[in-house]
Amino acid sequence: MANRPTRWLTTLIGSSLLALACASPALAQGSGWPTKPIRLVVTFPPGGAPDILARLFADKAQLGQPVVVDNKAGAGGNIGAESVAKAPADGYSVVMGTVGTHSINGSLYARMPYDMVKDFTPIAHVASAPNLLVVTNNLPVKNVAELITYLKANPNKLSFGSPGIGSSVHVSGELFKSLTGTTMQHVPYKGRQFAIPDLVGGQIQLMFDNMPSALPMAKEGKIRALAQTTATRSQAAPDVPTVGETVPGFEATTWFAMFAPAGTPREVVTKLNAELQRVFKLPDVLDKLKSLGLEPSISTPDELAKFQAAEIVKWAKVVKDSGARAD
Image 1: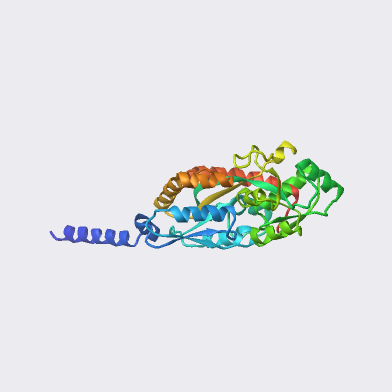
Image 2: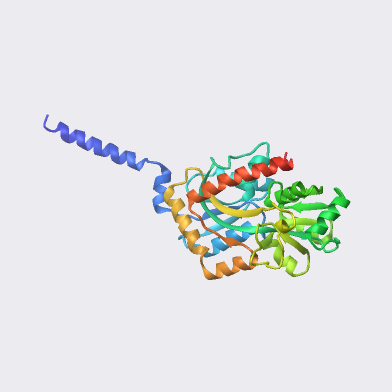
């Protein structure tokens, strides 16, 4: 009888240790994370702003394991975002989400392969940038007012390109049409690297391209910059007016943020957020971003969640008002 309490205590301790050993794999992985390379998915092909941001982070991150950039383009970014939404919540798959993949597409696509909120864990808002309204050099317009006049005189005769349906490049064009009462054809490509040659060659006449991609080409004289889409002029292009200076109420900011699958351990999210904070405060990184027109702005996970919620509401109205649909 005297040994029963001892046997009972031994059994209890053993059961507790077994339960701890069998606890959530995510908990175990979080404490020692990372022990293998981290996959950072970019939802568009190489060369655009999300790819630039992802590769800057991959090059500078000091997490004890490499960060490998994986470009998975298609369906306005949905293919790449879906691959992370459905990945294990262990911190080894994250996505450089965009305003399209995480705030616009839910309103634009009748059928989404993921839930923009429920299927992800917010890590941090990373950066934002204007889109740049650029035209082919042989289009006889030099500013936004002249473009509007030309569009009204030539309804549906001009085409604007984008790297995919639902991208900020696409909906910036839809917002422009809605606010100016003009019509033009949208031509979606499988990435900006396919659209730009057609813009330079005149097969399409204009784009609302991400500034980090378009500004260098405009400076080289390959295309003409008419305006930027943010409310105020970017320091990277102070001589380029905003669309809003001609079209009151026009504002379209593209943004980029890192997300992980829903249920990713908090300690992993905290480590990634801290490393994003460190990398995007490095002087050489800040200089690079400034030259491209990208504004770094690393948020907390909770701040990103609130920002995303507001953006979903904003872009749902834009999509509804424009009548744009992806399918």
